[in-house]
Picture (cartoon, rainbow, N blue to C red):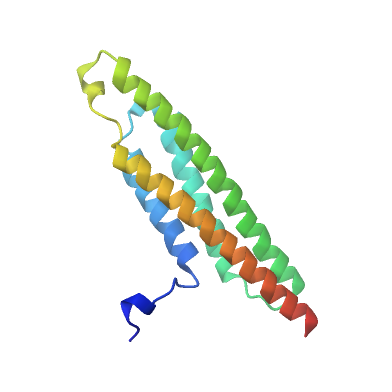
Length: 150
């Protein structure tokens, strides 16, 4: 057993974080007002699914050839692009919902669509995942270089 202070991140932490992001996104997006479903809920859920699915594919790729390394790199880059789009769309959703909460006169709309801690948690997932993907790409680059020199 490894002591808590000596533990490091799992090599597949990028996959766990992407899964947590997808679950968190689904739980929060179903609470968005229905009239915004096709603008935000559907898009954010779809992007989080694509991020997780791309990383599942990347993780399942057996690195035994240069084409396998390229395939895995393609999946990781696709997940990273979708993650950046997810962050952009999340920022737009936050701005819209913050505006609704301040200006909409319907009493039911005065209830916050999403708590400030939820927006913070989303941003934490995004930043953590970007950092993990950068580490994964660096690790894969080293593995590819070792594979080439063998």
